[in-house]
Image 1 (cartoon, protein in one colour):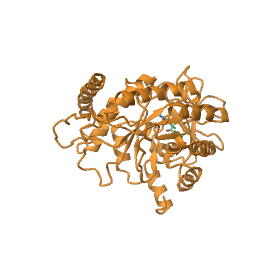
Image 2: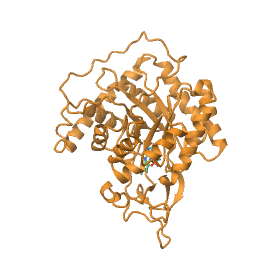
Image 3: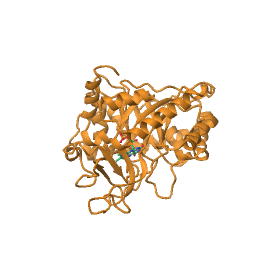
Image 4: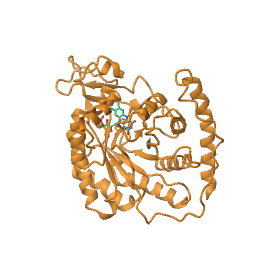
Length: 391
Ligand SMILES: Cc1cc2nc3c(=O)[nH]c(=O)nc-3n(C[C@H](O)[C@H](O)[C@H](O)COP(=O)(O)O)c2cc1C
């Protein structure tokens, strides 16, 4: 039973050393202190084979304080981004950009984002603007993107998290959780779970949660699985099987990232999938961007490449995100076996007022995406100051 897990661990370790070499080449000059973790011997892989199955108990809860995080997005793509977020004392956890087991084929000509003003549709001068440029246009508070997933595979994210977690110069409020965002087929996701779980053995990195992105609107010819009960159950069953077959592996809280639902039948697909196979889910992150959106310039031309269609977020998504958080929270509370699930509320939060609205709608934790791209990491300090300690 352990053979597959052992292989995963070995391959993780092999990937890790390859990634370490890549990292050193790319980042050593600029991030010397970050990349000099204490020289510890490799962890002893000790797995408790006597541990009984915990499938009859509720899953481990997520513990995030302050209950404010970044969402999965391009401003959480590389080591520098993650280290900057880790140092930010106003957030209680860091979410990585979505990664897959194998590197995603990022195509710069197709995969782009813009910010725009939701009142008059005026968009950024260029696609993929950096924070320095975006912050000069504070009214462009919504986003449209045609991005896929991160070009970096999961193994690279785990190597980066290990570097950051072992950095002796990290500020004191550390050991905060990383929410590792992943996606793929149900089997891929079960394998991601195994690799993430095994990466905590030995205690060098702990506090990992796994967020399964089942809601990216930009993958051609693929309906986001979170719209379909059948597809959701396939993922949940693959994870159940993983937990049942390897009860001795460390237990990692995992959750689902959902798209913005617009009709009661879509909520029922989610909730009935959870009722059937989701009793081990710790959290629901809602929402992702709203697909099928289009922004045109004054001459009627697409701003994004191709047909110009992409996923919309930021200020324009906020009311729909609040509605999703409130509805999902209510539906979970109505079912005893699902009421333990935390809702992470994301969509259009850019200040303390948006944070308060999300909490009032039922979010246990609040996430920020577009406003991080527009304002930079300072957005979190602004929210913390605005709240004056009333998290
Ligand atoms: C440019 C961009 C890229 C994104 N990439 C991802 C991603 O890789 N994985 C994911 O789960 N969500 C992704 N999202 C969705 C955000 O995490 C978030 O759920 C959504 O944007 C709503 O939050 P916001 O209104 O604060 O931006 C992306 C959002 C944007 C704007």
